[in-house]
Image 1 (cartoon, rainbow, N blue to C red):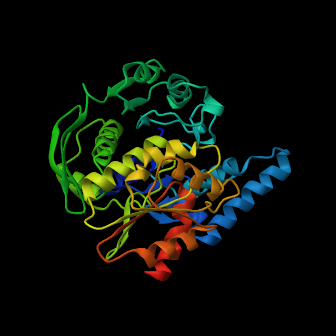
Image 2 (image 1 turned 90 degrees about the horizontal axis):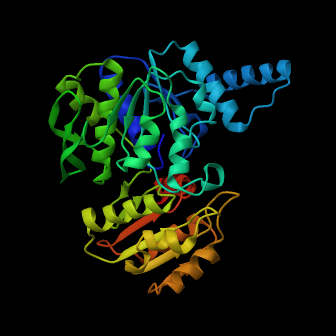
Length: 381
């Protein structure tokens, strides 16, 4: 669980376990383009036929019991049933919402992991980060190891007090000792409770991915109750791919898509864009968000007023925030040029028409925006 970084950390853990030769089932949410992405074995998504078979089995059970699961509960049940059918060795399961009452919390996990705690889903958890941490700590089971990436002492304590058998806390127990920009990602020194792993290449952009790597490696050590051989660490991290998370999809102009969907994620996204990439030419921001977000807060976190052009759109979702709200917020911030569009495709077309070869286009604000942008960019780039 965690406010941000769950998806990347899940993929890192999966790849590290695969490097040991294990059959690994991975369950994540949401998906970008196809629902099948959520359920995979050794990073290969479930097939359409297998997915249909599992959903039919869940529907049969619904008819017998009269219990009507939610959409997420039904997909979770299908995932777990498939994992049993294909006889995976280990499951890596990403929480959908908070933790305590999430459908994934039926799992009797050996290791519980929290990446970090930020302000999100307050309508379900309560108004403060402590409320959120307490709900997320509901995933901790008696006997489980707990890996805590959150460094705020009060929030970390919510997990330490949740009844696990052992706690591993970022800072005293594990951390990133060195975190340097490298071609195509980060070069990091990772300190775990057992040893230090120097010069580990993580092929994802952003300093925060070093933090996620430390959490992931500590979780895998906790699972095996032993250090991980250095060659398997290198092999596992080298294979990590995270679509839609600061993913470079085009050059000349540089085109980047990122699924930042809350202010903390947006702040991280902007830091990576301006600090790590520092584009030579003009900067164009294509942005769409979901309703319920404060548009000005999101745009401020993205540093929208530092872009030369801001192109707003309505995110391709029933919960998409009208582009007019983002446009109004951008103009109130003093953004230099704001162009409004009804769809993500129209915004992308306009951005690519405006961009010169040395310019940079950042597309972000929601995973729904990224999910719509990714297949469209494959057609037009």
